[in-house]
Image 1 (cartoon, rainbow, N blue to C red):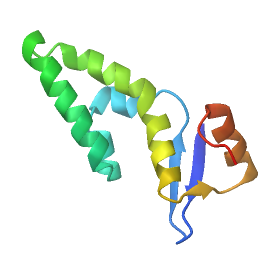
Image 2 (cartoon, helix red, strand yellow):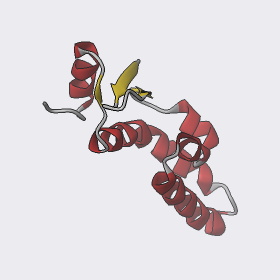
Image 3 (tube, rainbow, N blue to C red):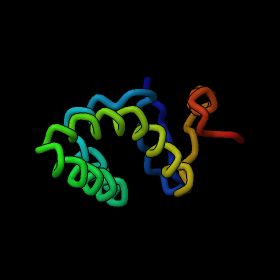
Length: 102
């Protein structure tokens, strides 16, 4: 389920609700492509630190954990940057998601 957020400048961004399959498969590249440099760096550093002692196998677990939390984190940060729900339906979805309290 997608939630549409709109900035006062007219820029719209869609955020999926729930598990992020793209983050699970592509890891830190997802926030990097979205322009979320902070979370791309955090995910890369955590994956690198975990990968060293596990010979790369730990990256699977890192991607799994971030896949559960990244979409919600991304939505929260967009709201902090001034984005608002486009419709009442989007606002209700954010409230259900535990992200938005008007």
